[in-house]
Length: 222
Ligand code: TMP
Image (cartoon, rainbow, N blue to C red; front, top):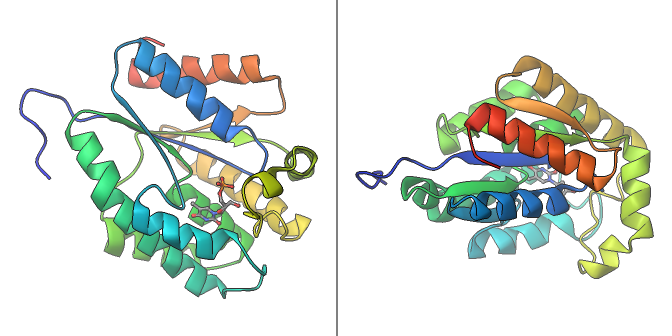
């Protein structure tokens, strides 16, 4: 879709990290801060974010851990992602909205690549086929030891609250440790796009660092 003349394309910010790292809280706080500074914000999530992708989400996040083989899981994620990008993300960016997305393609590299062991190059190829060169302008990885994050989600009764959406949480600890290493590797490989934020601190400290990164890297007055 063509950008609306006279209005700059919006910025695309993604939040990433393991289970229980506080992404949903931080993304909401950043959305409020950006909106207060006069920026039009569109808050969304993956898997999901469009009606079709939300239906695919249900297939991915509920049920037996071994419900899908790794490649099938990858294809479901990219089917959902294409629908989400075409129907929501691209049109929003084109009309000047700042899109804040709770997880995006780096989750696929970390979970399906590092976690399940799919070849990283295969995932990059699929990304190019499905989405071309689309990349976030800024990615904030909320970094936390998986045993702490998983304990937080269990203590908070997260799975029950979200209708049994705990298929990945039930995967073994070693899977979550590989996934965290994946996020570290992504941040190291692309430091200009991806920042690691220590999520073991209290909410206010994390919020302040998120705001300062968005100010410094994207020039927003938050
Ligand atoms: P959420 O708990 O942050 O809503 O995300 C749902 C789950 O989906 C989470 O456990 C991670 C998983 N996931 C992947 O495995 N690969 C992906 O590409 C995405 C977007 C999510």
